[in-house]
Length: 287
Image (cartoon, rainbow, N blue to C red):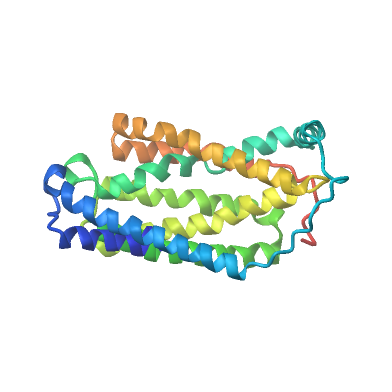
């Protein structure tokens, strides 16, 4: 809803308030300000209503902790140290940390730059799409493709097991980045072709991301502190997206969109190598 419907609505509202596509930002500043104020107002109202709904509907199952069961700060600190120590002494954990960082390395580079590429004018190498077009293509068709890919990947892994499917999931996750390279080189005018490439990339994202999530659940998290260790793995995974994201803007400005997306394809090679040779600690045949 946020990436699709509301972004498309923002584009429609900006046109309603007098924004002109292709005009300098200063000319459209007031129209964009009004349109995004309305969008954020809608989001705020939605969150308030959801909060009220949750207060009424969510079950309250928490059991009060007696004074005798309450832990001191020192006890909590010792337990936290034990949780961290246990995580970093797991079998193959260093390999696994590099795996969950490198698996999404290409995505980390593309995530921040792709919307700018779609929005930027053709004079600077972008596609020059409108806000409404981006909201429709990315938010509606892209999101639908993501959900479909995730569902199909669940069936795929459940049938063949994660160990047999992980490398193919990595390929399906990273290879669709070719779509952005194609768009940056060819820069087609056909909106259907652009939409097809974006949809293909989001489908691969949804399909391949399941592999990483299940790997963290099945191979990294199991043990005494399963929930905490899954949270640690998720945090490291997000760090692997944030770090390349921090450098992506600088690199895209330095290289230009076409060479940047070619560079991203090269950055996916470590993910293929580390996934192909990754060892499994736990048997996944019955999961």
